[in-house]
Amino acid sequence: MIKANEYRGVWPVALTPFRADGRVDYDGYRHLLDWYEENGSAGIFAVCLSSELYQLEPEERTKLARITREHLGGRLPAAACAGLGRTMAEKLDSIREMRDTGIDTIVLPLCQVPGAEQRDDRELAENILAILGEFPGVPFGIYECPVPFHRLISTETLGMLAHRAAGQLVFLKDTCCDAETIRRRLAACAGSGLAIYNANTTSCLESLRDGGAGYSGTSANFLLPVLAELCSVFDSEPERATELQRFLTALQRQVDFKYPRSAKRFLAMRGVKIGDYCRVGCAELTTEDNRILEFLNEYVTSVYPEKGGSDHDETAKFHLDRAPGRDRNHCDSGVDSAARA
Image 1 (cartoon, rainbow, N blue to C red):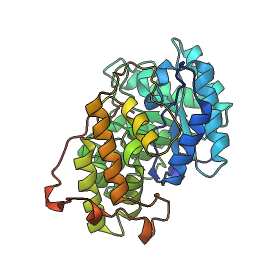
Image 2 (cartoon, rainbow, N blue to C red):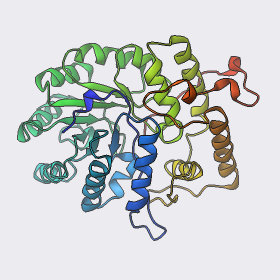
Image 3 (cartoon, rainbow, N blue to C red):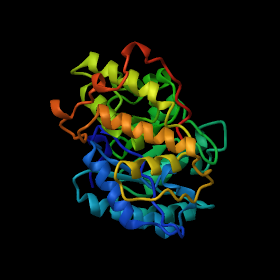
Image 4 (cartoon, rainbow, N blue to C red):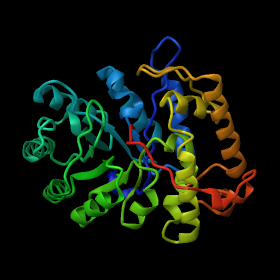
């Protein structure tokens, strides 16, 4: 298995394509994985909320994870959620089934861990350690999944878990959406091997400069090459990184609606062979919605004509100066919504 903390950068939250009759479109999913890989991903976070996690049958979750691992062929690492069920026994069975897919990292949605409904972290932390103890040697992650309720973990508890389970707890998808909290979390976990991936677009650059491992959120389904370049140049080209962050912050407002249907439609415009059917309750796109996505596609294509790659050479950079009517002074700060991926 490849450990998630060894691959820093953008981990897209993988969508699940469906056919018009509601069945999972596994061929479409393979096309989507190709797009993620070709556009600069460091890893893939599959079977997550963006994947319509709670609308998938258990066998669909494990099949998607297995396809992810097999299709990537070891070129990129992959993580997937498990630990669902009503009882601890059912949750452990879910983890065993996911482990058997060969997925690199098993991610526990925090709201699914017994004790998450309590304000105090004590029972929650004990159960996380107990789960990890059932699977020695298996890499795990934690996901502050906002559905069915948004449970954040305290900095103190996270630091304790990171050091107590050093080498096994390797991935955190952080959805606190607060740069200062992320900074404290990074300090608390320093030296443990836990990699923290920010789901908030607005604070992405700040968290990278503070030592964060990368980005894993909904914007990767729209602006993956831009985010990949940001993760690549944030330290070596600070002015460039600041420019990219301003662009991302401003454009985030244009992608935060009727998700995940909007992302599926946008990716189809980008050439990915998937439809926009969703099992999760999601309104149909209006004519105006489609026009917004068409404009976004044209705009991104005009300023980023080359596909993003992990090397981000000069020909593949995001050409902000090519944007029609682009005025860099008009990139104001937007506020990212709580990560839903």
